[in-house]
Length: 221
Image (cartoon, rainbow, N blue to C red; front, top):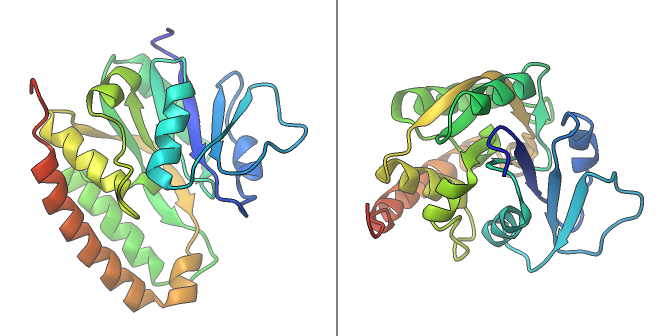
């Protein structure tokens, strides 16, 4: 297992196509696992592995991680956009250590209300001050640590990323900011309303953090 190489893992919904653009942002020769619920499309690049399984983001992320053969795992959302320095900074970060949990600064794409800039500011502030990034910030973790933590919970409809980060913190795994920007879609805020979506996310986050702390006491830690 190459301790300086990583596998990019992307959960793919049945109607998603944004991952096509994301593939072009991942440098060779990093392997990519697309963990989906549908049959493999034709003409995938050789380095891309299409994993077909049952639906559920936590389940799909775990299935993708199980196929990885590298020391590092980088979990990205299908609609993620990486700035020019994000992959270089992430590669430098993993080359400098054996364990850890990394994330990027967050920004929203221009497909939703401008108020999502406040959400991005809040997410970045929370991550730096409290070490609690979300999955749309591109979580990077070593495979041994991921396995030790038991991966993502598969019984959650939403928030498996924050739950994982809280459990990682309870296990002594510090979240580190990598210098780079990752952009994610704001279409949910446009479709469901900025205030309503923001409020719902805050309530869900509080509940998830509390529950994750209860599950964070792992054997042997």
